[in-house]
Length: 91
Length: 319
Image (cartoon, rainbow over all chains, first blue to last red; front, side, top):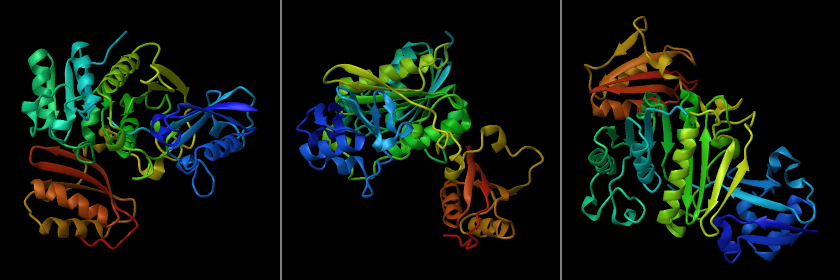
């Protein structure tokens, strides 16, 4: 099942400046693992050592915060989109 | 649509400069500018109120002068200080606050203070060609902590120093902040939506937010961070007993403060009055170091009034 992951500007250094990466997965966790397999190092920016999402990063699936769904275990459907929304500090 | 008559802009940098222009042009009667830094050469490409001749001069002063020169009818109040415990009381003097700060932790603290004081607020952030904007109506809508509980620790995220900020993107973000700010006073406030703009593709996405019940900024976990006392409650009033230390200097101010706090129980409050810059700086620092909390700090001329809550830690040794 192919899903698109939207990559925010601060993390595009891990994806060779790609703003969207397509991966095959059936859950949010699987999608982030697949993203890390394609672009090593990016998952450590999103998840802590225990595998939980970091508190300054949010993941949205179909415009809904995954914290209000099933978290990283949320099932995902073919052709849908995941967005990564990090805290942006500059001003 | 009704509009606010006064706005405090916290941070007069890439977001603050264009926002100040839009707010003055938009008819705001009284503008406050809170900004501790001086103009640097590297600021000029995006901080559009400053010129090369202003390098080294406090930004609050230059920005205030520029706004007054172009809009003489606007009352401009400048504060060349950082946002923090000694300046947070300023927020309540304005109808709304616009965030132009450049550190995430500061943005969260500013949001917390606005929520506690009930002041409508517009959060903004920008890096490279990406920007985020969120309008907040305290008590009604989600706050930044509903989305991000904390800022990225140093070294874990690409910084503005590494990626830079494209000047026009800061301008677009500031324009959006002002648009959202106007809406907060209208019938269809733009809240519970984080606006994410990508300048490379020129696409804005709207990320829906929910007010998180256990949010540390505006929800049930608010007490964990220690909520501010709203201004009405920070006025000692005629009945309150105030320990007047205005006739003392350091270290007598420390000793008298400790002696007053020692016999109190945890959670008890103490009002204190101090005079002079040294006491204003050092006494709150030593009170915090001893495990107590500053609930309010107000400075009027040379005199500073503090409201202290006694902590559970009884070491109480002045630093």
